[in-house]
Image: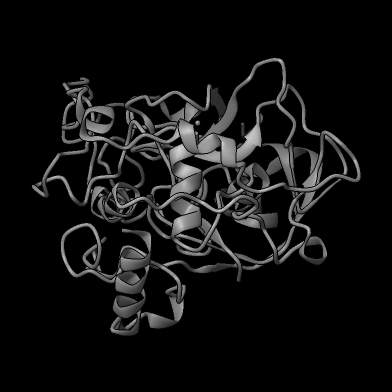
Length: 334
């Protein structure tokens, strides 16, 4: 089985907020995270009611991107080496995304060339598997036009978790977000989108090669390990979204090796890579960075409606898509 989804004013405001952040897990909070406005979806995530910006370090290593796990990992292939990095504990919430929308409406756009994994490959960023010798280019200024965050863009579909004003959905994962908007958010928040290798490494528990992020236990239908199969809030029958989505961190037993929750289920998550039929070997801090014939980006993690076997498969979508099952989380330098 392959485990195969006004600017100055705002920046000054955000900088002032960052100085006031305090938390019992402050060591897990990236200093640049714009998640210090107290309130739903920002400072009250998960069972611990902690900062939604919590971002544990994932210790680097080597694992196999292709394998089967039926209690013991077999068919190991396509090795990849990943340097240590931070990966946010929770998918981005409506509450967190609301702060970014405010910045965007005030004129903020990513600076060209930002969003690179500057902690790897001597500062060059991820190696391009599709073109040996090439590396990440970062944000492309022309893509500013691909980011539109009006209420109509985000919330016109009844399946969207976005609301024009703060309400009861602030702790739900933001959905119906394009790849471009997800990437821009992560840059604004001091990070970047994870590569597929990074995302899968965290979900596999590195060289533990786990079947699911939490291990080999069947996820069942009780919403303890993952929000999937339309089992949330009960029944297994898909209703009208967003009632099928759970607040981030609800599946409390589903933590990966380094503490990340909701890596599978609830919403699938955008990765940096363009979709490609096969993995390119070797891979050391790499991503597939050349647009393929598919013209689609990788999505991982299944989502709220898929079956258990699809939680660990690769999906893909046009980067301009904003579907109800698409969300994201950010990665950061360690």
